[in-house]
Image (cartoon, rainbow, N blue to C red; front, side, top):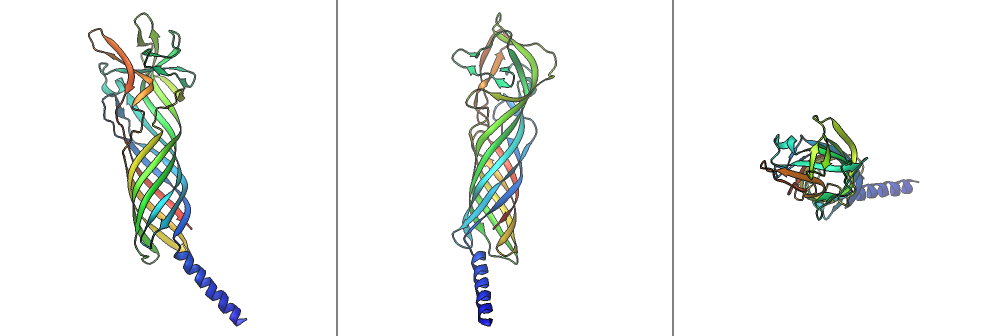
Length: 289
């Protein structure tokens, strides 16, 4: 009996040691994000700061006790607001932004015909002032991780790498003036004196939905892992992601920019907002096994 107890004790110590020194860890992560768009054109402007939350799986693979890879799969829900047209400049020379719609479907703008598809003088049109994007992403972070030896019950670390987000869905809440298309002047015109028109849960019928399919950011994070029992760690981290790709579609497939030069010449084209990367702060808490 004593020999059996001794073997069990030695085996338990060995398993614990192996678990604590294992190279691969996986667990759950959740947190919040703060976002802001860097606009590089006078056609749009950021309306406040965006936000959201994330939940998913996270894990580490250690090459040695101080260096490894940190990755995972996260599901992000985010929102942010953008101003357009008069809401940006307060004047008309830089352009007024319009789109045609049917219920919650936003019609496509055809560059070849220079017109919104299937549009008539009785079609629904909105002159867009403010848009709230409500987006869902699947995010795959891949970071190089540098960590200290265990100090008491804690390990401190830093991470640097790429945060890649893939658009999974988007809806838009739009506010603006009721408008219409006038075939006589071949122009879009307001039909309301106030911006009390609110279109909710809007979605373009085009393949591109107003946001880019892939969003990339270079991230740097810092955090700490608390070994509160056995090989289980609770961790806290915060990081900044510098956006390197556009967050919104550069040349819109559904928004029309109508420009009046003030001398009687009116032109119309797809809204072009140039590069517009989105920067992000992320705050996470998770558990690793």
